[in-house]
Picture 1 (tube, rainbow, N blue to C red):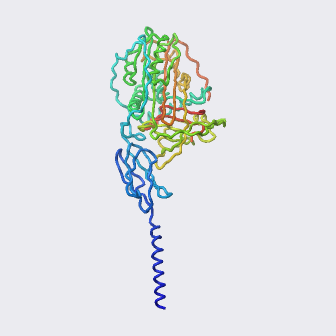
Picture 2: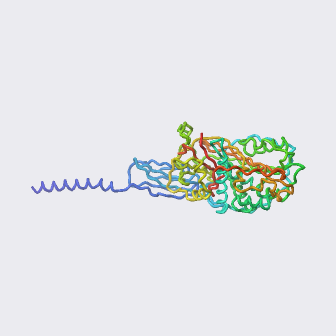
Picture 3: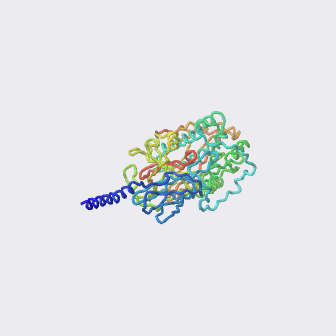
Length: 524
């Protein structure tokens, strides 16, 4: 009897031991050694999975890192940073995923930190168009001027707010007079640079109106801000950002003041031409624009009338590859505001920056180098693009960009491939923004010339094409001046982001949030 009792007790004890072992093992928690790591480019850190005997599968959300695993079960991984940015390293154990955020340090500049700047990449592979000639009838005086060194003035809150406010007003006023086309695109950088060149020649009330319209910043200071911004953008090797300026004036009719020309050479590296202002000059100006927009804008002028005396031209060309490229597009529906829809080439992917603007949702997708990015904004459902743009303020863009979420964010994005050209005249836009004297016989451009002149036309043209590889965009702005004795122009008549429906977008400087290109798409 005692033996039977002892045998039963031994069986119970053995059963207890074996039943307790799995419970203890089950209590051991699967864990990733770190949930966030910070690296420098080419730096390495080790991650480990503990608490499991299963094989681990490692991956990363972006191609910013390489992962080298150790051991038969791959429980250890060495993470090596390739280029700057933010991504997630994922360890998959069975059906469960364990994430570690990887922040690769940014490169500092004199204007602070950008979105994510790593080692200087190779310039984008690109093909320049064959340059078109400038005839000998347009006499270049550029060699007569040697650019003086201009003290840098980094973008601060005053400048950022002023530019964002002006950019939104330009978009709103351009939209208000648009009756022909569903897609619109302006380049605030091109328009403001051309107007800043003009502003340096203005005096009295004419200059005051221009300074007020552009945020109340003095003309020289404004040009200093723009010169610093544009110099930094063109120095970025991650993308191709080319900006050029030129001044043209009519032979025998007008003499430009050397101080005005020198300031534009100093601030804007302007080329200077004296020309007869005939059909040959129109071709020369168009060839100049063609050359400096890499053929994306083949012409800016149709003609120069008998009263034309000067033309101040800005040209910008941008080409950027996505820092995290899209795969091949798939066919998905894009629905217009009237409810009609059609299948378009839609790019899909994930990003790590999310923002909200006046109820609309947006994301930021960087180009290589991290200094420029595509910003897409989808208006709230039921709100048209026009109504959304009408309700925007410059501070809305500033505040939304400053408050963007980048920590632990995964944004599922759709972006349609699109391509279009846009052109408009901005005389009534500028007048609606408060610049009036400059267009009348009372205009004061005494800092430019002693000859009485006023602004006749402001012509603006843009081009954009976006696909899975990246984005190409260009802009040109021409401020054409005429003899000041001409009658004043009449005041304008005023009329008051998945991206699978009409959306607003911008190409922005990631350090400041300033939009370099700004527009919307209503139809693909």
